[in-house]
Image (cartoon, one colour):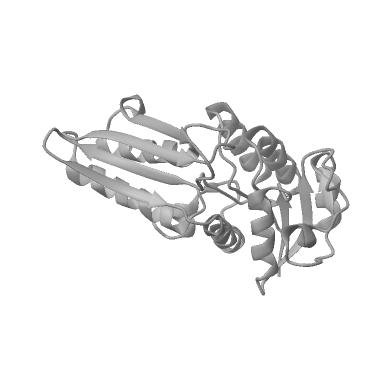
Length: 258
């Protein structure tokens, strides 16, 4: 049985991940953490997620270290904010708990800080800007398209999300830009990214390859956030079964696409 702690338990993704965990035969939610001072502290995480009582009370992140010591999880799943995720990963590393991180918006410095903590603690880790299976196939498609079309094609990325999404461009768009830049041996600065924040759009990404004569588009649209939660479940199993101590893997590793 894989024992799981969830950070960001009161958020949309946290609740979906808890729901998914509750339906797995090989997983058990043992801790649910949200922001310090959360008004939901003391509530049952299962009831908040809409799946009934799970016997796990929500606690504030200021008590994360003692909660990990008490509940002894195998994996900590984080869907929070970049600054909070850095602290949570450090705490998990010090406790020897593996991590699955779906949080986005990290700066280069924050990414380096996380990687240092994982290496120092020799914990297993999966970190991905997008847990969706379809998006990670989208990444492979974009890479192949860039290599086949070559440097004669201009590249532009358009991403759209709901109005409450804080980071822009999205982590998925930035990852797509990195993949294209590497495939074409060009700077990421030469790849335009346009961000749209409207309504309740879950997530849409389009990579456009164009010349004056033609245009090729690769598109992914998320229709439900459950796709991200389902991917997180795969990442949890992978980090326990195939994770490497001190090494950061991503969903390309989880899905065998690398």
